[in-house]
Length: 151
Image 1 (cartoon, helix red, strand yellow):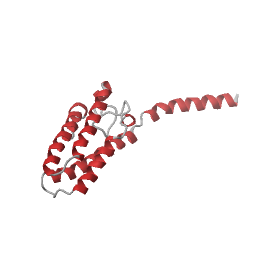
Image 2: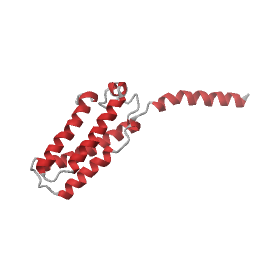
Image 3: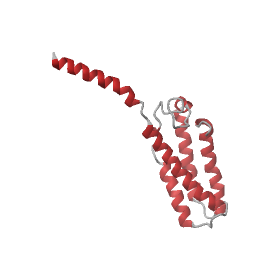
Image 4: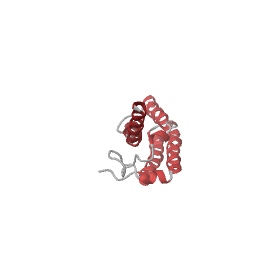
């Protein structure tokens, strides 16, 4: 009888804790926000070059564009679990609409990755600026559809 009571108690505690554990997406949110910070830092480096604030340095541009290319290869699926939106938890601006059309998020992420190839091909500030505009357009398309206004 004592074994049955312990087993029932264990099962009840496990089942009660499971929904709480399943809803803790802070790690996934922090990971996706971290990748966006890495993107912002490197896009800022490239933006300064494109605006002429910093001289075109092919090695520095290569490092920044290679970093963006590496980030674009991150599998986004694990970073966007359903229930990690701004209506379900604090600390994110992700709109619930993302999960209504998850394929759209994937397509927009792929478009970002493709646009980075243009950044990698830049040979001077002018071509970098043009490519940066295209990359910025991919960021804007995703933000307009999937991110709540900041603030």
